[in-house]
Image (cartoon, rainbow, N blue to C red):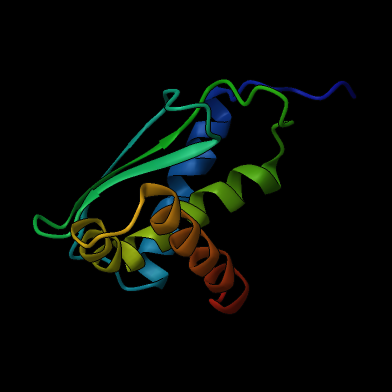
Length: 121
């Protein structure tokens, strides 16, 4: 079967269900989370969050460029973005300190990848 590089409505429904599953599993239910199906900065999925308001928008990108779309990748993307909610308080504090954007992003992403391996699936 030829690989797909664009997500479909079915992929988005899976993404929404998976986000909801991990929000409940990780007990993040006090957050108001909106999901969208739109591209953002050339990533598979993305999050914009506010710890102060306990709100987040989690998006699944339509165009995955050179990354093939699979069920496993959609699932992993949803879980990855939910894990970002756990770390958002640290992210906001780091943003207020004297770090470069790249330093903050590298530290945040390495911690998310660690948690991906450690938190229940």
